Length: 526
Ligand code: 1PR
Image (cartoon, rainbow, N blue to C red; front, side):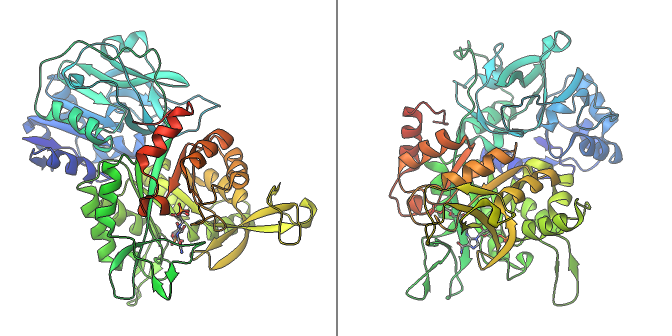
């Protein structure tokens, strides 16, 4: 029997789904005594270090956990579940960890790489362990801004290292107590296999075949599914042409959301994004079919899932008020790992520009506080506005190789809301920058001009936004052939590239994109 320590924050559903998909039954820790009764305990910590420790304290779990660990009983921590084993963390000064491994968790100190460390990386094994007995050099999924540095004090715990700037501990183990910084439940078949080793209590090891001298962080290839209800009332995957999803009056229907997401998972997508594109009109919590899509997808897709659409405060027909956090809570409970905010981020930035600061009440701030920055993606829907000179606008301009309709040599990138229906007086560069200040962890950068055209990513837009933030940026809109992906990575340095139409219409397989990108010397997950 596997016991799951779910303290009620973040997406523990995916860990539960992974355990069940592997054929094990799982029981929840419901009170402090359950910890001491557990046979094998799995702790998928989520959110911030301080919030995790605070919850453990409040639930009375700290002492039984310490007793369980001191007795060397089978324990497997994931992400924050690794970090809380240490004395403390820079993330939450003054908050004591479980103090089982000496040392402090530190923030990544890299100025060249984006933080969070979000995506697929390798591990270098320091020694043999049953956990990694069937592992041979595949990449695993990480998402974190803080990490444990290897030190002489924690030498006996060091099981695996990963390089991101400096090396950090990607796995620790002593006796029956193990923890990993990556997410096995989000690392595809390799991660599930690793999790199975713990769940099954495997004890045999194999010699290490992993002889990497350095680990390599991969660029991500993301498949995006724009979802909406068609005129017949069915929830379908659709695809716009510069955001117009109708053809001969009908909503384009490119398939069923769950089936398509599963196909992309099996074909090697590093992440799947669902955008509920008409949720700005409706209340997403009333959209049970969409939530069901998310639940069913998370039972069969074991890479990160992002969901966007309709994340904002809402008052229903009975006058009941919901916060953006309530909407996000439901998305996370249904299986999302990250949520993406579109229109509401523009409104937040407009308020920020008026007041000169955030006031802590925006969806971005609220959700980042509870679920961590890495869980908050900002989806930007910009459209080009051409000007003759940078002096003609207060906005961030670029000199463009694609001249405007009247030969204009400059343009700025106007943010829109409601799926491109309304332009606002905010540009994509300032929006991205301010959202990062407010706590967003990633930018999903679309382009209405390029969407569905197959003409390639808008490198001028993407380069300008990439240069304005230190968080990861996903390039989106316009992919038509494999060369567009290598070009956007090489020209702008973005961490991920997303496409929809070419994957839906089976014009370019995900594997072909990855093979091509690798041939250009750019790292991807195989
Ligand atoms: O504003 O918080 O409710 O979120 C709504 C979300 O729905 C936003 O993320 C917005 O981007 C998205 N959305 C709204 N309307 C549309 C539309 O197409 N009519 N889809 C829409 C945006 C853009 C991409 C697309 C890429 C790649 N879709 O996600 O998948 O452009 O396409 P391509 O490879 O075929 O070129 P809120």
